[in-house]
Length: 131
Image 1 (cartoon, rainbow, N blue to C red):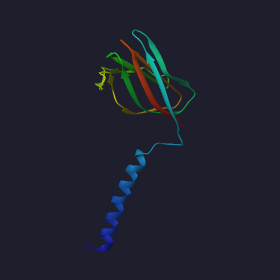
Image 2: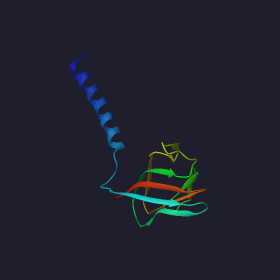
Image 3: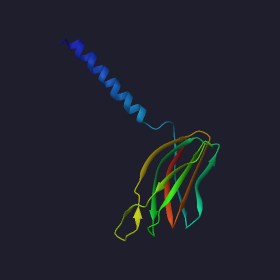
Image 4: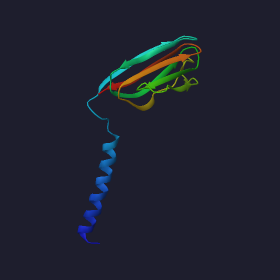
């Protein structure tokens, strides 16, 4: 194979590798946020309730001090609410359960509302950013 053919193939491969890395990048100059919210048995609490904003929910981590279970409800751009059930987590040395960080990539262009609810105490940290 000629050297020029090898260079052409190498150039094409490098282009595709660089393009995939570019698509994985976060868009815009984001302003990072970390918001905490919690709830007790039978209550619902807002972790984020913002309108007229553009951004991205990056991830969530929840803590269940009394081995409860809970759920997170996401309402993106005023659309139908989507719920993620959190059945508990992995126990730590004290027996309290944690989910660890759950990565997400929830893009919003006009509003975002994230609510937590549970059958006991549920505390969640939410990593998000505004463009």
